[in-house]
Amino acid sequence: MTKMRTVDAAILILEKEGATEIFGLPGAAINPFYSAMKDHGGINHTLARHVEGASHMADGYSRAAEGNIGVCTGTSGPAGTDMITGLYAAWADSVPMLCITGQAPVAKLHKEDFQAVDIETIAAPVTKLAMTVKEPGQIPGAFQKAFYLMRSGRPGPVLLDLPIDVQMAEIEFDIDAYEPLAPNKPAATRKQAEKALDILLAGKHPLIVAGGGVISAEASAQLVELAELLSIPVIPTLMGWGSIPDNHPLMAGMVGLQTAHRYGNATFLESDAVIGIGNRWANRHTGGLDTYTKGRKFVHVDIEPTQIGRVFSPDLGIVSDAAAALDVLLEAARGRKAAGTVPDYTSWANECAARKGSLQRKTHFDNVPMKPQRVYEEMNKAFGEDTTYVSTIGLSQIAGAQMLHVFGPRRWINAGQAGPLGWTGPAALGVVRGKPGQPVVALSGDYDFQFMIEELAVGAQFKLPYIHVVVNNSYLGLIRQSQRGFKMDYHVSLAFENINSPETNGYGVDHIKVAEGLGCKAVRVERPEDMPAAFAEAKRLMDEFQVPVVVEAILERVTNIAMGTELDNVNEFNDLAETAADAPTAIMALSMLG
Ligand SMILES: Cc1ncc(C[n+]2csc(CCOP(=O)(O)OP(=O)(O)O)c2C)c(N)n1
Ligand SMILES: [Mg+2]
Image 1 (cartoon, rainbow, N blue to C red):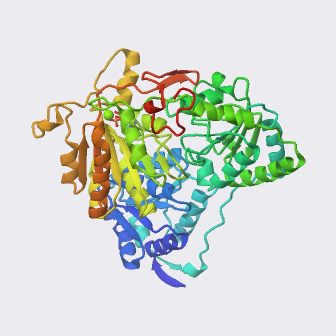
Image 2: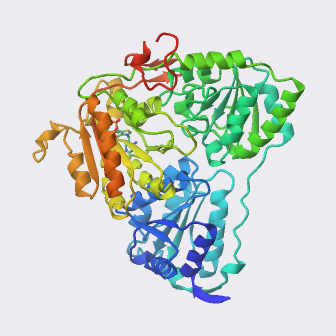
Image 3: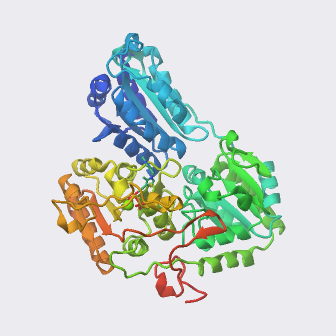
């Protein structure tokens, strides 16, 4: 045994649990923890410029690779409250992330001490555990439980709040006697798998809906194998996008009111038996539940028991980790295949593929200012299959999801449920930390980009290269579009004459100057034919300077992006593809009409 400060024990635990990437910024009440970090020397700390930014960086880092747990840290009071949005985004998308805050001394917690806030209570609804650790002897156990909870069942974030006197207190601690707890993950049985297949294979038009749980369980390979074995098409959700590559013949498209493909919705409406794995029937995926469920049987597989039946009651619910469920479904399916009891779904799969090759949206517009569709077409040309996209919310994210392509798990990293503006930039920095050397491309609208724009300096200081595509319509575009329902265009415009940058032509903020001021490189593009050269230049600048590079695409100010109220009631607003030349980067060349 060795006597040491609790913070020294905490750092040894972080190391043993494999959580050595910390994003944060110090303050008086967390300085002891920082001193332990410094003394230890084995922690990689990234100094954020805003504590909320630190929380999104840790979130992005956790999402980037299997097993990652990003840590964010800040002082007492406002640092903790700044990170609540980060905890919410991680909580909402089932991301493990550890948030460590400093706190006033235990004896002062009720005395309205400087920067003493009850963060434990504030964070409770958006964490799996939020705990102000009041006993020094509980520090090892609190960290041990945090890691156990983050990894068990439905993953999610934990907040540990450390009063400064507890941080400084000494305890006897032996890291060799500390063992991480084995996480608890329920696993489906063969019997459950057989019942699931009974329902699925009774359908004439079955589908597999693959959620984010498939990606977090690292089960994409089993998903694709199951789909191929049964010839059943797959609908990935927005969080499950990449679990089956877009160019796989059984990738049937995304479904929903916004981030969806025309062919995905059309195929879903033809289906009669659906198994959802690691998904949560999100409302922007389902739309109205009558339309979504009518005439269909459902099996729902989720790791969290209370998720079954939360949105609608399935015909069969199975509580299981997605990987464990897919393993046993594969076993059962192989058995049926050998026995010749799997119906032949080839013609159904071919019909779905035909829809993928016909129901497309036009992207090849030549307009100046540019239409957003053209920017995504150019991104498809410029960025390879190994690209990881990072995005949050806005017309930018919605049109991006409709038109970009994703070719593998963890290559579409999106704050899906919470959608906090400002998440994209710092999350991208965390993703770069989590995927060093791999191409990372962030996608923001101008407003998302302006939230947390200061974090670009973190990328410049710590040499975290990525390309940040900013589609600038000088509008809160998504909200402008939704205000059509109120017949207003009220406080959604970001346009003004910039007295320092007349070249912005009334679009307001000069993103190039701001990005350069923060130590990054930036390129502005106004014409579609200039996009390829701009992306090539951005890659060159990124390679040479190893900093974030912004590519700002100046868009037409008003474009309504396809969205709707029901799966069978999506307003397209724009031209559809009529020939292959209308959508030259569509995932399948337009086959029926082109
Ligand atoms: C913190 C926060 N506040 C408000 C919103 C609501 N909101 C969603 S999209 C949006 C506008 C986004 O504008 P921009 O980033 O420029 O993207 P665009 O829709 O124009 O492509 C707003 C205000 C939000 N998601 N997060
Ligand atoms: Mg905008």
